[in-house]
Image 1 (cartoon, each protein chain N blue to C red):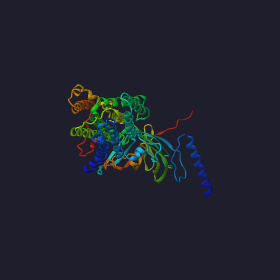
Image 2 (spheres, rainbow over the protein chains, first blue to last red):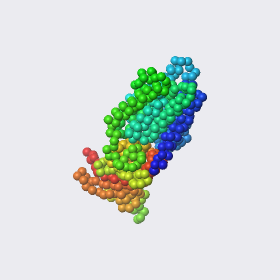
Image 3 (cartoon, one colour):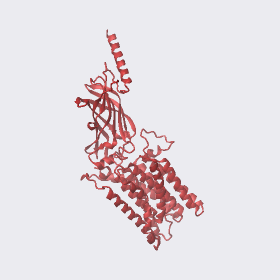
Image 4 (cartoon, rainbow over the protein chains, first blue to last red):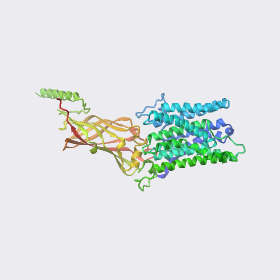
Length: 319
Length: 216
């Protein structure tokens, strides 16, 4: 495999899914719907789940998802691997995002928040009850459910920096996945992170170029999708980890958006939304770096038996 | 006279066959044509001296070798080679040994053997055909990553020796599989041409005779 083939592969599993997601969200982020908060949140949430799904299909196959449905006609001797349930979660989230947003639009203020909480709690309950990764136990299932709720709440705290926070969370998850020997997880998380960063950059550029300010991506359907997906991937990564990554690190990474509170005072005193987003984003980024350094200090990231191999994918499969 | 001889052989085979079944150790192998079958001995694998080696092409270049150490299981085989050996061998994915701890962990990850989800690899023989003196083609079922497929392996009896605890018997079996048949597809097309699809396996087995407990 030469560098051209490697770039083609990266384009196929990372850039194309991210591009598709950005295109799907574009009408809401830069188009006529950008002043309608529910549509902005719904589109960003849907697009985030879409990026994960498209990357999943390109990394594995369409059948890997379709055979998980009871009515599927796909026959295979191979059992459904437990981490493939992540795709099913992404499908469910992609459907739930517009449903939640529609219901929120139809509700009065106050009730819409209750709806968001209800959707997150329901999703956490269903995933904690029915989605099992290897070495599952009551404690782990409870942790999965609680982490879904905690991560979604953390994304709500990030406010207008939710998209950038999602980029940081999934990028950090990709690094952890790579370190833990789960190359495919790393690919899916990278695609999702690039999609989130792409949407965040698009929103920022659109806001800068336009005279009318659009609605930020904050809370609602986006927090539901980003939080539940991040928590599920984190717990899957923890379950499949064969490199001894500290278990707490997966929990911390899924809740990284709480870092937005680090410079909360500065964010509140900011003259405009862009500056507030910057301070929140900086907090999330600093927390991510701190978490990474903590993992690095406890986990030998440098490979003592690494060779001087010129293999471009050396880090993925060791050697 | 030839008819009488044939009937005698048939009867003897039947009695011996019934004898195997009644011992609780069900030999799953059978030969196409075996005139008379001696009593098989039961052999318990010596984990220290039993391992499976696997070979795979890396980046379209060299062949890379790895090991699955400490195989466990049993073999049933008559020492006079009158019947094929019958294998039930298990390898724990946690015992993978590539010479690099990092690579071991990656191989145990979900893209390859997925040790957390499928902790064991198992081979159980079903039948055997003689290829030569102490050389057999053994057909059996290989379970890897939760997928069970029929495979054929060529097994030779490496030797019969004596250890401090009794007889020791060694076998060496070779086979080639396609890992994609078992759902291990990472690195074949996605990412492209990273690792080959064909995996050559050499299963080196050594075991100790297990003497049946004498009934009081």
